[in-house]
Length: 121
Image 1 (cartoon, rainbow, N blue to C red):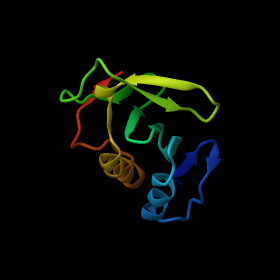
Image 2: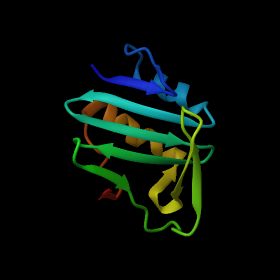
Image 3: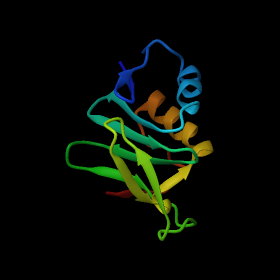
């Protein structure tokens, strides 16, 4: 069973993916973990405008999004569920509009979204 954990709280597993996306899109900041597809996990950090993704294929390999059209000189702040603020270069994030496709793909298939550039982390 696929499990959504948003800011340390599990969402109801029976919800449809579109209902889950509606719930999380209303949040200004979120730390989301999607688990339940073999050994893989998807970490999602959201702020007001951008989203950072880390796909953990196993304990030994991880993949991050890389957007060559965005600046690496500008950083985005993300509030974690424990109150810590993490900072990532803008070129390792995507617009929130793109995030739903990435989340939906992983939730339904357990695979990375192919229409974006992933690099080993």
